[in-house]
Image 1 (spheres, rainbow, N blue to C red):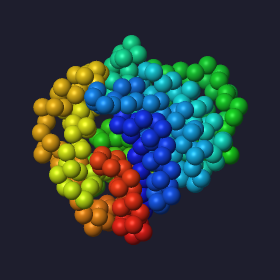
Image 2: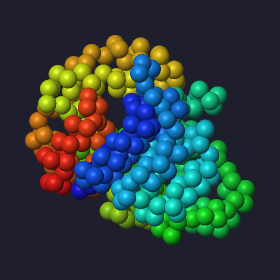
Image 3: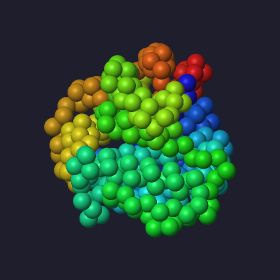
Image 4: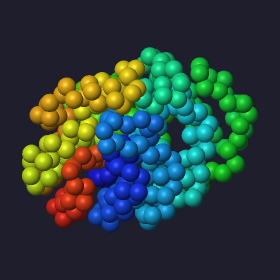
Length: 324
């Protein structure tokens, strides 16, 4: 099983994240995932660098680790044709080291730029349009597509990688997971193993069957929210920055980080153990990863809210990654 490191643009500056990623690769992490946002989930002491130019710098500063988004939303601000071109270019420059993950997005990435925030059924249709367009453009040649929302008019991307960029789709419910089964090389979820096996795995298989694909060839990735420190209370306290997502969810139209933070502050730090795997013991991390491996996940990517990223990465290197 591969283990990935999540570079959170919301919490660190782009320069700090480059240092984290260099250190993560040297420590044995297999992949890097990064957020692709306009606004962060918090206002106080937050950051929000642009993911695409940062990825170019990160790929240039590393040697072998695969780097991609988790996730890029094709809802309003990102035309699928431009997504296809950007990631094909990165894939051509850094062969075999780039992935793209799509999802149905959040309002904070659309409304601030004066795009509408449509309900989920509409966002799902836009995701399907995007998958169709990106797939056809990466096949090469001139592409014409008249979709539900997204369209292209005889466009061709002249720079394509020799090795196709893997396309992931992120989903936490069966409807998006079915789309992943139809189109994706990989599937990313936050859901635990039990929910995945009961609800999402059948949906993934249904989507693959509809598209005459083999679901066993779809890479399964689990995002694990984690906070580690030798001092447990310190590890728990550092999760406070991430109280925004559980406070408003992913479907709400709230887009102002100040409002998201105000809602998040209503959640106690103690409640964050429902969201984050908080520990002061590397053995707990090894056991958790082993459980996810046994559940059938091919990769676990770790979004670390640890108070000291250097300590977290060093502990992963010396105490955990060798097992995987």
